[in-house]
Image 1 (spheres, rainbow, N blue to C red):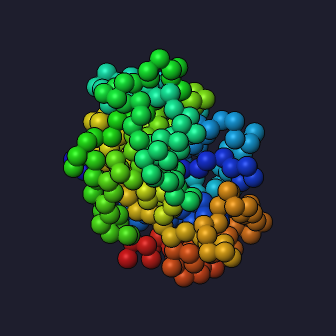
Image 2 (cartoon, helix red, strand yellow):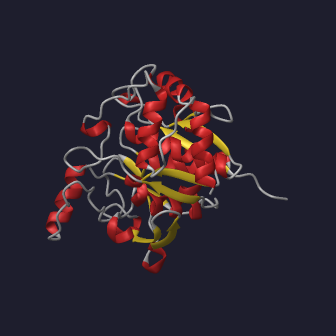
Image 3 (tube, rainbow, N blue to C red):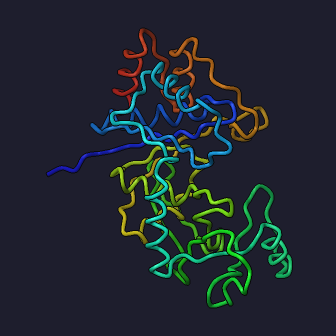
Length: 295
């Protein structure tokens, strides 16, 4: 029996409370990929960082997607309502010795790296030096702030995977990331754990998302392996860049999409994906792009 093909569209409520150009590109790509391959498209609101979520932003995002003809094939899922699933996964990792409590602040981590003659790269998170690993003394009497995933030692820390657009990829998670956070010091769930648990629970087989998330993939693969979950197929879409050549996003002031003309917004997103402009209704345009995507 052929297993169903299930794609997810991920949307994090932004400070603007609306979609921006980059998120529409990824949404359109994932929707087209699902339709072209006979799959289901599922929408997930990734709102685990609740203090930063604008009230009613989720409703506005869903309305904007609907205006573009992009509607979830199953009931929408909100991560903020799924804490019990994430806690169960963390408990499993703790029982396996794959997660441990950490007392380090960002300053502690920076100081530890400085003592080793290492510096945090600009625009990059510091590589955690493993200060609170159990074999290094653990918390040493300090209160726990967060929970971290214990990245495997040796060759097991190197993850190889194939991206459907970018080709073969490789990353040594131990040397490039270190033991990463699963539950934050403020009690909120980290994106890496939440997304892996939800992908497994929803039976996600294919993930289509922006290229800025490529380096998240190895961490998620390690978590999938530790939790006994399958690894989806990944496709990372081109980024929408600002005038300075950097990714256009909510962090650098990307303006909310003007969806007074949904077809115009979709044509702009399609152009970023290398698809030709379409005319007619939104439905007709989506049909044309789906046929081209399948070809």
